[in-house]
Image (cartoon, rainbow, N blue to C red; front, top):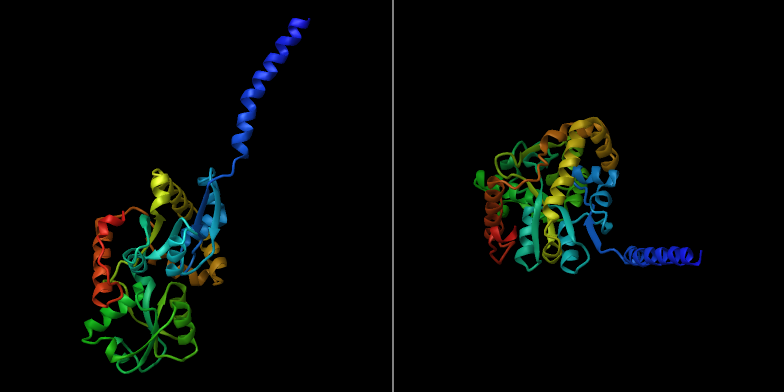
Length: 311
């Protein structure tokens, strides 16, 4: 009997020796993953992923936190400061400026392509096209994708910024300024275009034939080096999201309407504007080269950078 008790004790001790290290591992703090929850102007995949808890499910071994900051330049500054690991939805122009200024980040995937979601909108009935802006006031964000559209549209009409009164400001402020009737035109994106048109505005130029309207998902280089499987895992998560959108389009529209505080009927026209496939194509690379040229020519980006080095 004593021998049997000793045997049972030995088995229990052995089990404890195995179990206690597991408890210690479970008790260790998880590595953090800080990912942006940037949903503006119409970042539908991120809206869906936030609603579905995709980040926690796809990256369960991390302590995931969502950074609620709706500004590309601010997010890139936060990445440089070590406060965010993945930024989703930053325009290629803003990313190139940040990367050329020393922010150490790599392109994880394409977030979207949406030429039609970048537009110059006027609410002045006397302005029928871009040429009608000569001598008039335009509000918008210099160095943005829609500013690139604007510069190209001006050049097509033999004009430059010197021919108009340009008031630089954040895109959300530009939309408010236009709706308040305090400028003749504004550089708008996503839902702000539909709001302005609904209020009587007219699109006088958009990105169609001018830009691909690239937005990107980018990752801090040091985080990527520690987790080389991240691109494949991110792509798998995004593919799952896009499949959900395709399977329940009406549900996706409702999610977007709730997030943007618009009616589903206002979301519907925007859906065809966007291609959310995250694979990088040769056309995407060519588009980034074109964007870099625009940034250099307009002295928005002063340091050249090799596009291929960003992948």
